[in-house]
Image (tube, rainbow, N blue to C red; front, side, top):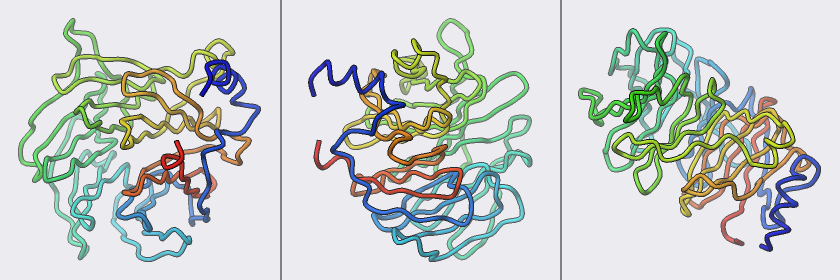
Length: 288
């Protein structure tokens, strides 16, 4: 892509469509908002509304395959072994495991912190949780069974807080943790030792034009790029593994409105949930 074309796309993101190599494969309407989405295979993803008490498994035709209900509001969830869940209960300050058969087990009490975003690592390498407290935020890594903390990320090497209100977290192939912080209105990257690598606050052009960066969720892909749902400007931002803005993948001109939960399935397709309940599935990696 020529440099002048890249700059033009950045500055006109609110006025033009996303790149030509992005193809919407399908779209469907979930029953409620698509706040959280977790893919289990190329054809099915679990979808949960904001602070709902259930998650619903949809296929890519929009058909409801299965739903699971609990008696607390789910702040976030992760899936391991393709069938078991880890759920965060923000109000109850607990993390639960939910089996495929519906058996609920308390894994961790996080009091006085409230658990927020969850990310499950593959191959039984544990999970990581965003936590929010009155004194600020932190990100904690646990073993697969939740019995042991293996790392806590809270302050940088100068003693300054890394997070204020961490909402969602992902891990890249280089073991960096990338975190959405909704109070800092930033995407923050730390390495596995907890050292700050970079902070993304929106593209340079959007900041120059006074366009607010309002991240909700994020995901990584096979190129180690970070994909971010940017809610108020109605864009899907893509940045490099080093935090440099690459492109707007989708904008409001493409029909997206208030994007929330996102995930990348095993074939590299991007699932985007919206506040309206609309879920769109995009193919964008194969043609790049």
